[in-house]
Image (cartoon, rainbow, N blue to C red; front, side, top):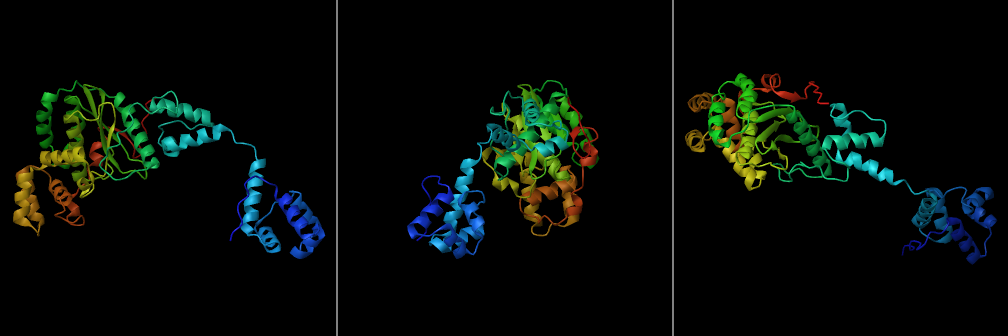
Length: 377
């Protein structure tokens, strides 16, 4: 049976003295039993030398107690002697829990600071709060397309979303008119065949009252996009371009437009994760499922894609995909992406059709990342 842990903090030396007294031994006797110098044994008893693992085992053998007992006794005693840490330590740690400080400094979102007080002031300014104990007013909604959770990911999501928020404040557009949404999507669809046409997207959205900002994703995060509102008539779409593929760009954009169409993200920044992943829609709630379905419908009508799948499955030849894409007025990569999302086509197939679009976009859209440092101070 293991020895019970001491109920109160007792100096280990006092317990050793008690053990010696019960046995009628002297310190000299104990030094011979342990094979240790008498002066060293005296220092252990007086607390001048702490009990380490080796000493704990020797005392355990000498007195018939478990070695862990002596180590626990020593640890409790030393902790009782240590001064209570300042409450500032816990508060300082909180700063690094609520924000990816190192990445934010690296990206220039906050300034490098020399003290915790300066860092707290920087974070309060960034999150528009008076104290780190407050919840940021536009904290991202808990609902997201992905399955990632945890405090670290929440901090990454919050920082990314607020960077997008601050960038959006520096942009200007006309007032958003919901009745013109269908007209906007019609114009957007005309850009689908040619990858270079994505450069027209920021201005087109702005002409219809929607701000677009590009914020490179943070390491360890899986953010694809977000939808939120500066005012009830000023919607914003933020994109990470985490996957530099034409299908991912258009699906994410249309997904966020679905949120705007339904006035979602007002009062909270609606952050979406993993929506550009093949099969990502299987991990969503009802709202995200609807946004994915509407995004897909705006790109390739489901009935037309169903018909194509029924005729071509299981062999989706490249020339057939190109022919179908031409009839639909979209780039073949968009169709490939839809087939992957539907689980009809393996991700490794027709990768050459998933052309890159990032370079066409970041030069004309308000962008943070990929070496582009944007000062908003």
